[in-house]
Image (cartoon, rainbow over the protein chains, first blue to last red):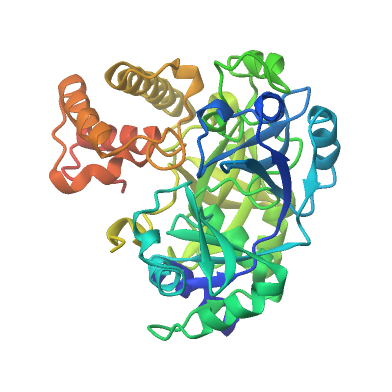
Length: 346
Length: 101
């Protein structure tokens, strides 16, 4: 618990280091690749340019979420970063990108994540001053010693975030360089707390992370991920269904804050598994996420509401477990403004 | 509030959400319709990807359309359409700083 809390506060106040889990697929640059990627990914692939990245979705034919991905455009190639342990996504890639040479680089490149309001100080010390001007969802190619690295500005906690991609044989050197950073203690997100930590950190800012915030088969409309979709694009997997879903949908995912602070472990478990949301005697939704925010000092989460009831600013709802009523309210998300909003990269 | 009052509140909020989305589209010349903007997705960075110039334009638009004054340090209200609507509703309700209770 002590280590977990230390890492959490480091993420919110200083910086953490961790090993992000992605699968990396490489495609050669070219018109056909561009077109295939645009069909595979629902977002604005044609807005990409070298050193820019796109955060978007792969949908299935029914317009449901298969995965949340990043597309990175280099001068001469593309990288597609998918979730590491999503069993479905590879078959979609192979199907849609069938005319394009696909190389999986997952085992060749290792990734180090540095995230937090002062993460830029760490990255600046090991890469260069160039990262100071690196905007969100951009990347640069640089070196650590003689080894090439790719540094992206992208994170999942609502704080400043960077991913350093380094060839596996150069990982040790990169870690050595990071360990030389002495300005403050860089807390490491160890494997035993990895899922719990990123589940919480991403939920607090409603960052769409596959497996934590967003489940496979979910609706991008209910999850409020319209911003990851290019509605003007001529074609992509699931487009026909999405066009219909944006007007006709049943559910809405809304942030909830629990009014009660003292809940037993069993009650929390029960809410996570079976929590139903009511107003008076009317059942209006289900609890989808429920966790304790250390920063807010209370339980927060998300409710999947019937469309007509899924709005922020309502204190009359309650969660029912067994015969107990637990008061809650719906709120706008992110649940708070992160410290990075008050910190200037310099 | 009873269930009927909650329904009235939801209708009011829905209308306001729609108006704010229309304002964002019109003011910033976005090629979108209100149904393509999430209530909760961020306006800046990820989400709609607006910048600080857009933010100032939005401040003027919100002040004109909804008759609320937005203070210099209150731009954080613009983190999503939803939080902007919270701000307007709270100002209407007499909460001077527009923050959620």
